[in-house]
Amino acid sequence: MAIKSAGAFSLVLHSHLPYVISHGRWPHGTDWLNEAAAETYIPILNVVNELADEGIEAKLSIGISPVLAEQLADDSFKEEFVSYCGEKITAAEEDEKQFRKHGRDLMIELSVMWQKYYRGILDSFENRYHKDIIKGFRELQDKGYIEIMTCGATHGYFPLLSQDTSIQAQVKMAVRSHKRHFGKDPLGIWLPEAAYRPSYDWKPPVESNVGEKPYHRKAVEEFLSENGIRYFIVDSALLKGGKSIGVYIDRFEALKQLWGQFEREYQPREEDKEKSPHEVYLVGEHEGKRPVSLFSRDPNTGLQVWSGEHGYPGDGNYLDFHKKHFPGGHRYWKVTSAKADLADKMIYYPKDANDRLVDNAAHFADMISGIVRDYHEKTGKQGILCAPFDAELFGHWWFEGPRFIKEVYKNLAKLKDVGVATLTEQMEHHKPTRVISIPEGSWGKGGYHYIWLNKWTEWTWKHIYNDELTMRDLAREYKKSDNQTFKDIVEQLARELMLLSASDWQFLISTWAARDYAELRLTEHHESFMRLAELAKKVLDGQSLDERDKALLHDIKEKDKLFIDIDPAWFAEVEYP
Image (tube, rainbow, N blue to C red):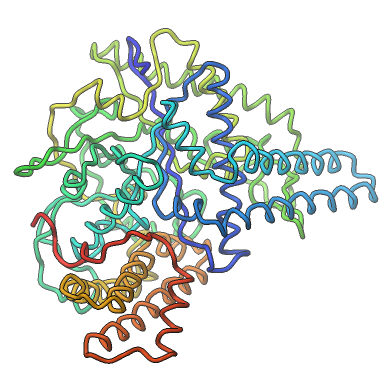
């Protein structure tokens, strides 16, 4: 642990993708997983290992969602990824031939860069990590260089799920899956979409079989405490009020439209100047349950990295994300300017990007140390700077991001009064005692649910709510049954409900990033759920499955074969009412 006299910095990365194996490849599907592995997960593994080789402990807190861990551990992904890298190498070779034919010297250099990049990624995957990315992270954890956090099992949006049993199942499955993959229980969780809800009499926001009468709901932290999770993270506006800054709103025009509809109803809470994002608090005074620690995002460092317009990734020298050379899809152009359209993008110069990277990393390290020192000088307390980001920002959205992380840590290692620490180390060092309450909300601009619940997504919640009730009833029968066929069906039902409940679908619909795909996937899981529910009821009525029924069950199980140790009983009753 390296919490120094003024305090410490904690970088937190959240890694997550929805379940895409066996659900398409390109442009939406397994290639999302391949891209994230090649551009983010393996580069981050490499960076942390390189820092360790240089005698620098990253002390990174990285969240790996259970559904992502299941996919990275899947043998089909491992073979698919090797083929994917081979295709990227071949595409770069073909680009080189084309560029040589036309005498485009700068583009030739970049095509060679891409060949080297993907050969290096493939070599790391096969020879350094032996095709096991999960094991790579686990080894760094076991050496003490990082800690690994969990998330909701399939990234279900906790505040909008209609049954407490659904949240219970998301958390219990997360803990069980995490221990299977990483060898220990998780202490921290990245709440899906950083979305939190306190305890109160809750009313379903859309019409469904759940009805309209309010009913009492448990607070999110109760489920965490019951399952041994010690801390979570929220946006700073949930902690102390004020305006909540949406981290994606400048990347998706559709979110700006949605925000325009919601903004008229939004009134930010008055800022509470007594609370600080540079301290750790406790949430949840519930009888017989341990309060859970609460960290919050530092808003200044967050905006500096998140914003594609005002932050480092928007620098004109960095590789542009959007403009791609087809058919291979490699990128050869730089951002140029925040307002430049695709036709105005200029050729990428790696040296210029690297020079800016060095400058930006030094600036960011100075910013971190300045904030921590300023807090320490004003309060006499050691400051906490919690900087949470989606991992995929580094490498996927921002190609130079993993190298930026490495340079930041190299700069921080030179400081005598500001250290780096995992969130667990921060929690154990500071030993929080102050219990506070926070309101309902998420990371979205305005801090509420409009990205996931709006006129474009209302229909999705109706299906989820109705299926939650069906799952509850069949889970209760599951607990009483000794019929193995029935149990197999209900176990797959639980998987389908979890996949149906992923918050990714509403996000993709609302951003229009992959709207058709998201609507198709949600509908597909709902239809699979309904057909399986009919089979379950058929078996309950004493009937046998015919060959078509058996084929249906087999095919759905083969397509969605995650969470081998799922327990449908989690959906039957709340364990601690």
